[in-house]
Image (tube, rainbow, N blue to C red; front, side, top):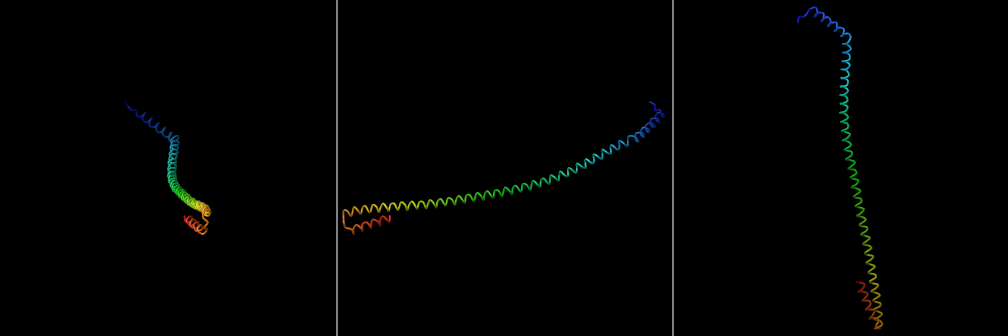
Length: 160
């Protein structure tokens, strides 16, 4: 295949003319679109970096807030635990005091009942002594001897 120099020159001239026409008509517009797109991409990358930095800062802040919340939760729990222990101790103390009061009342009641029984026994003993003395008087008129017997009997019953 033989290359014709005139065709080659015409093709080169046509290419140059086409290149110049395209350069003045389209290259600037395409270059402007490419530059605009490049600027948009750079701007989005910058925004993404800023948002990533904000996200890191928020993550750090959230971690700090979470740590503070945990510490505060521990403090609150500890305070409530101390209050509960204090209330428990108060309830136990009140129960112990009530038990002491009940025991004291029971002791007083037992002493009253004991005194009541002793009084009843003495009364019955005296009644029996009187009955005995009546019988003795009926059988034996020696008053002095009877008084002595009754006194001894009352003394023995009183000491019992």
